[in-house]
Length: 290
Image (cartoon, helix red, strand yellow):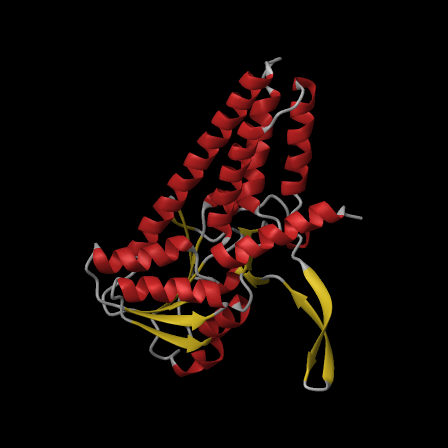
């Protein structure tokens, strides 16, 4: 049974993922880790065990934050190769390694943004769902830097992420429509593309995505609207979908005088067979096969 403190951290990370997306959550987590290492005051003998304890928690979040897991695993390997160091030297080396990992990840995310921009063609009507920061930035930059004329069909999700998207599109005068997700069927015959991101991509050809993405992808696939998945290669997981720890809970929800007993999941998943284009920091890649 998980300790309550661990579950509280998992809840916090999941809240960040809902509000910021996986990539920005990874960046925030790494920056927080670097800051925590700098503030740590302990005996030198306790330093590595404390890091190992935190690393174990990070690697078992619900769902797993795969880019963060891979970066922490690489960090652990580099730290294990070091000999005996003083506390200050160990703290500096840990911070330096984590900073390097952070910079590499941010570079990959920036490259995905550029490839996403290049997938936007004049007169496109682009559906966006489970939108990540790099897709949002790509939409803005394609309009402001590449001077391409297109329209964004934004599907309303949670308040924070929808507000952030709409604010950016309005601020940079990107032509857009905001609609409820359930009204998508009215636009499918005129849509050119669907852009999505993912939490992770598994070896059994499944992508863990935001809530509601599976329904949107299914509709687009049925109507032959090309589905573009933009994802850093570090999000490719080593283990299959059942090992991704998608969070679920049961709760009672009362409306008027009736109580519903609901079971909910924190994320969706989609089969890569319904994805037409997988784009990483290296550009479009062949869809993985089992």
